[in-house]
Length: 85
Image 1 (spheres, one colour):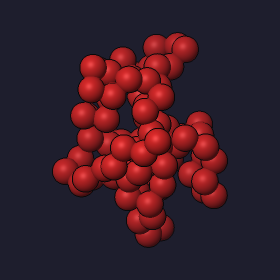
Image 2 (cartoon, one colour):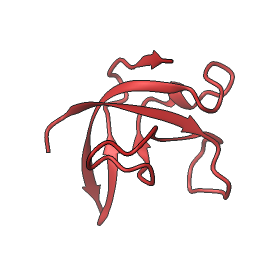
Image 3 (cartoon, one colour):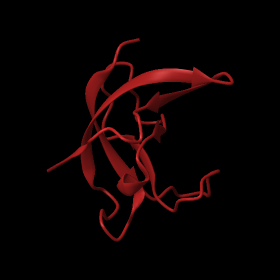
């Protein structure tokens, strides 16, 4: 799959997830193959609740990838992202 621009949002999950961060990132709405239940591997700054409160939306360049049988969305941690309203 090639990289595409998508809109994602940070959020606080209802139940603990396997992460060092309190906030997680997911697609802001279903966008073709990018479904809201998928998680996003992204720059850690997007999960900084002091800088970006839960619900902040971002535009990123990403693709779906598969590691150990689990599909998730990937964008490189050094790539720029844009805050959208």
